[in-house]
Image 1 (cartoon, rainbow over the protein chains, first blue to last red):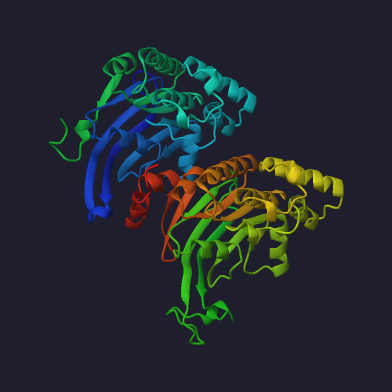
Image 2: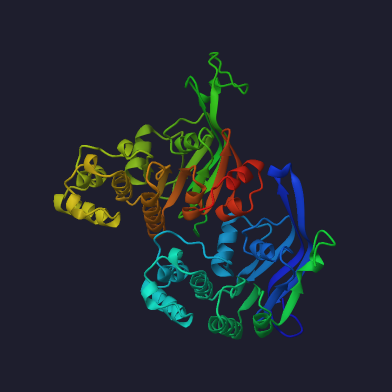
Length: 242
Length: 279
């Protein structure tokens, strides 16, 4: 898929609907999104815009297969073909996560006893990079993100919110996947570290990677995003978006 | 996980307690056998494909049938209905209910492991730790004492048991150490498939975390396929790729573990997930 600018769509979302059914609340249906459609191309950074509760995080979670898709298609264009995440089985979703799409959640999910350096190196080791090289690359990213070396051997459960988020960002950027989803990657960071994340995004785009993110910080969004997908436009219930 | 064929393929698997055990045809569809003995389904109608290197968690409350399912898949309980096909190391596929008992025993010696909830069920409590780990090797033909002892010592190290305890019996070990020893006894033969039944639930929380991390790293390192039964959704999240949710003997929801836990579709799964205490 190539457009007038000669870039390739990595992600194509079309006709997506998301409705939560709350069985514990008497089967109440909570429609969030409808007719959602947009694309993200190689080398692009696209922001999801809209008020809190509009469904921005749900969109990222559907794209990485973490949330079920009620209706529609979410196509990921991998080098060896197209995967429709909305219809993919568990093994296909895992393959897509391995080769195409990475996701940096808002909060790091800490695994007991696993050291920060290992958390960042693990995605590389899983993909067959030698452990020593994986740890070198992880160390490089942790250094750029100003995580002091004395913390590398410790599990991040006891780190500050900002430190945990930087470990999480490092883990997301270490693998060089074609598409990276970022959920508020700079929310708990100071100015200097926000700049580092901004640089990491620019470098990834320069190498042809695509980014889809939620950037609450207007300055960061202006610095990194080419365009904004206004998520309110696809709200399933009219009149709730502000 | 790139292999084209699943390691284990279960279709319509069911196990009924109170089954007189003559043959599967002696059980009528109405829940009463020919002999008039009323029976109760432990699990029924379960389909599962397990691929090499894949970890599947079976979750549910006690009485949901998850341990019965594990028993039926691993041939510790006979199938009342359905079939389990297993692809052996030599590449041939066998229907487990059709192969001989000797062939099943050979699978246990060479290709399968089973980790019990209570280590006392899987260990020889009066035999030394080294003996517990060395014995499965002897059963597969190892004869050289020095090599067996060295392999046992290496496995004690891998499961973080001080090697100077090699001559002590597990009777003298803590609960966490016993469980780690049971894992070593199972993994020493480099199995292709390991069944685990609530391996962490008898342990203190801090000991659980250590054991889970150990299982997680060993499974990844050895590329094992594993079916693990747990009532703890945190355990499923930490170590499994896929999760089956069981209720009243049936699988009511299944899928990628993080999707099942973060966006559960079935009413019962929503109840289970919402019942987790914030940690």
